Image (cartoon, rainbow, N blue to C red):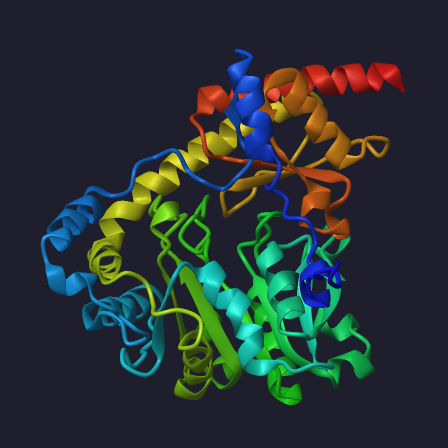
Length: 396
């Protein structure tokens, strides 16, 4: 027999993905007749904008939009990106050299370490956090340095607490505010301080701003480029998935100075040929009409948020209403492991949640509710969670 085939150490080092086993469990429970309330993945139930569907339909009839886009992509999409950045944040970017179409922001974020980190270099990642951050660092052969996000530090990555010897080796820091999964927002003085530290140490700052449009109670999320010096070090990532209910379309973009965007472009040239041009055509129309699309999405999510907070309080889980994102980060009683609890909730009640530990060990003690169904379904889902919580409390 020949030598056994082994997968690489990089692949072996990847943690389990938090959503991996849920679809099979859902199918089994649904086949058994259980009513499933999926509050797990951040995949909104509202339809994509009508303008996106109309533009996509139009694009399907144009054979030129079925050609390779390569990294240049559709010039109209790059122009729409630049125009949106100017309208939304007052920031000017050259469409040709300072914007980059992405196959969803996840793709760009996970490829970024390949552009800036070598073996032995450090990538600072938040935990709990989007698993693509950690995965991208590991696949690049870099060394992740995990910073835990906890309530006592307002769920912020404080670079001043990172040991000097680690900071000296750091090539990339990944931040995400409004945050997934905690829904935390970042104060302006914190963001300016973080930019200053990255500049002082020559660190690239990857700013994942996928939830910037999903804000409540008058809060307006900034761009990292609104802070002095950010142009030197930052690459900012955006997605049309959440704000425009276009998750499956896989379309996003990055912006930054030409040298940084150029490095990511070079990496991507070897791994993909860019998003489908037809989707870029539709995405350009969506960004051009963003101001008329987002308010209704935002209002609906705020209504769902309020319903979730009220329902959670009724089962004894008191959570401060988040000012942004599409998630509720719910603390559990200390005796309840998050993975065991959420699995029990799913098996016994059909409600899909994500355990805090699925976002890294730093997420233990919490579970995440995604505001991806209507208020009545969320309320019913939380009521079912309460039945399991009450039984768990009685068993202690």
